[in-house]
Length: 261
Image (cartoon, rainbow, N blue to C red):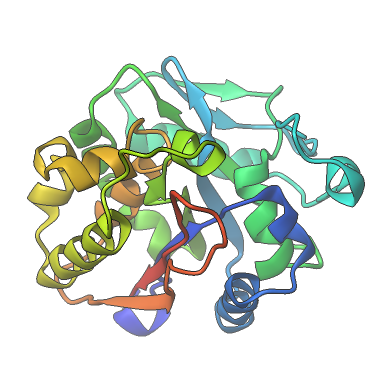
């Protein structure tokens, strides 16, 4: 297929599960993106499926996982009944060969997935497959692995990464007197500068980006889906900001969302 039929790839800063219910500038941006991009299926790479080894959901009817304990009310019983796509799961496994990829019939849609999809595709009529993050592998592995999924973009599959480029729950939950002034803004500015310049090497080796990056990414799980999306960027594509990350209302949380292509 030519570039006109190639689907974009996007990273969504998903924030709280409550965002599944909509009603803010972040969810408005996700809805706008979904209205403009209509795939035959979605391949979701979520921060909340963090496994030993690589797995892909292969159920025809995945369940909705309520993988949290601190949120009550409507979101605690929220259902996202989108179908799965076993054929796409097998296609992902084949593209990643010879890496062992387990076809998983048990995992459903975690809140990193349904939180975003409920806004982008509220009718739940687009099939969805999830690909796990192998917690035993370094960041460069995830960046390179995603690149092998590039043919899917020309096969009608939208690849979405879901996480948060700034995700420090400790700072978000507890006052920290030693928190340096302005660290979130400095990190955001540096990340966007490197993203615009195509400096993937530095973004993959984020541990070397200094103390602000260490505060933004104390654990890799929410950052790795961003690296997966970068691994799918082609040389003729520039990043577009779907919504800036500031204004989440939670200290230590940056909800930047971007699209490529």
